[in-house]
Image: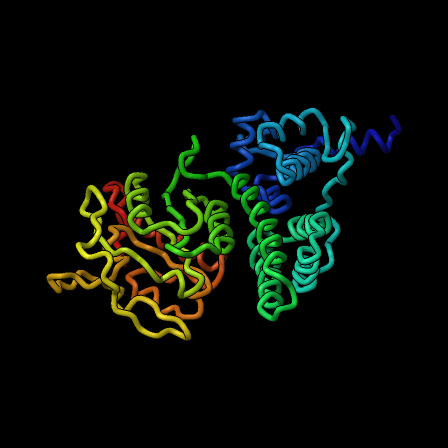
Length: 380
């Protein structure tokens, strides 16, 4: 081995990065790194005199290789095994040749608008390899939250606009959504802190799309952002009835519910009811249509969000009756933020980053206000 090669190898194995610095470089939360270390024996950081973990450039390189294995559908356990064996993505047992991280040379600024447009074009053209390369570049240079807010979301908007204008088919839109859904699902798994996982801690939020709501990518982005913030999130997906959602949340002793609502179609057919402390009890006349009012071109639940009862007793906004605070996000809430309060919920904010701050701060505030009582956040 040459002197230069020896120096390069020594540098690669030198512990120098803190967990937060590794998170910045790779997008993998420090909690997930610890989880990988405990479960899979990877990575293997050194410890400083105070017991804090320090990662080498080689560790950072290998973390990137493990991420790429997972992005290609490999389970976390197998991805760790392959990485420990030195098998890089696309290799046949060859040692990884990924470039070492360089923390001294500044990179040029990222043109997120150009990245978002390029991603949209790649997805429309069903060029998943190109889409993967663009997202890899974005993740290498931006925090995960910025990738979602400034790259993925604008790409989805561009694709939706082209579909609405008749320039592409619904098949193009569905293929693009499926690809991004798979990427977000992998990132959600990497972020960890999912409800039910061993070692989880902190408040639990149950996230679901409202009844009739099938568009879940925005809610997946917010779930990922919350998990990276240390909030445990049980993700239920699209089109979940309120009664089932409420029962699940109370059984899991959740602190809050997160509801995705992207269009007025998702406010039709809600079955009102109450959480009586032990179970969900639907209203006596669930088939009776609630009063409605106009919002844009659609019709939604009335301002109070109440269902009419045979005894005409006012029961309060529909979401206040679930026994848990409900945060509302999505395109419809962004267009009409006042709807959240009218329905008895809390407006989560215009994007994943803002919503994460709002929800996390609310949960932290409730925890600090009643540290020993175990009391939940009060519905709005």
